[in-house]
Image 1 (cartoon, rainbow, N blue to C red):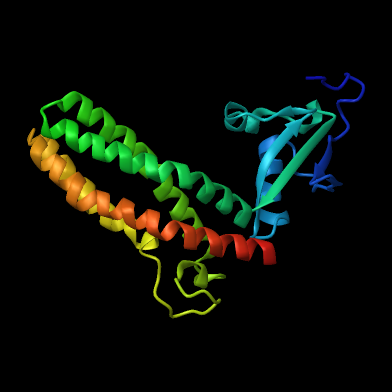
Image 2: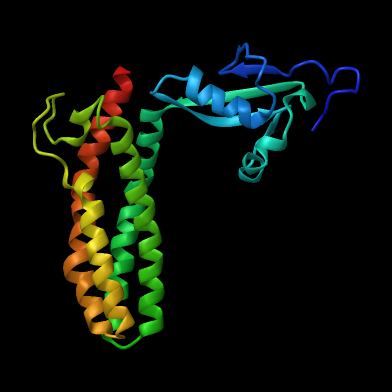
Length: 229
């Protein structure tokens, strides 16, 4: 990464937001200051920061954790790129078209392994499934958190932008699944793997199948809303 020369260090970095130069208050000194300022005071609610380039190099996750120590005066140019929240939601739901079938398959394999006594293999498949389920739950929760006030119809099955329609059960599944996971842990702690298999097959799998049945409609609504935005 090319840093400024000593003679140029005193000058503030040139900051571009979606390719347009951005003026900053004098109190913005670090990369962290910049990111917080842009997200809180510059961007509208329908956009989020996606990429940060420091003199052409991507700011990594580790870099974000150290951003409070990174002085803007050490860089010539900082480029910030944003995306619409709706577009990110569409991307996540599109990925879910592959992930949800994988969850279903892993859970079914887990049940079979547990029922034939392959406890290690069954639990391993179950854990893999739970990690993917956590990803989807957080995606749905994020969509709900962002749009529940401004666009409540995105949660609802009605094709038009009408409130007071029946909601997709997907948006109601987080609390329900927490109870099922609690029951699952109790059976596992008791080493009752037949009970674990029953919970997975008769309580958790139906929720995942509900996700799959509703995903095309949720994705279609998000795509339509994104096209209009």
